[in-house]
Image (tube, helix red, strand yellow):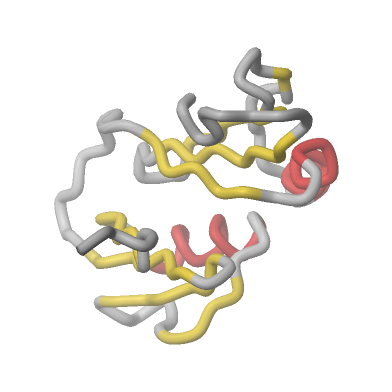
Length: 124
């Protein structure tokens, strides 16, 4: 048996409405849930990003979720235009161009594109 891929990642959020606005600005397509929901789901390519309302959630860094994009620079501009404040894109020695952004609940997201031959894509 082998693990094929990650199907979904679920983030705890303190304010569902605020989180939905952020994830939609990032370009995720909402499939289920709204500002009043306990659970909301977004499409992320063939997988999903889920949000679960956790009253009293305190933001803290735990790691990051990495999302493959066609163009890190275009995604970066999309976020800036939407009023978000991501880190600047940079090239990595493992063959990716990427940047990070922190969501309103402290979850770090990375958007990365392949820019060369990479044997360790997604290692950052």
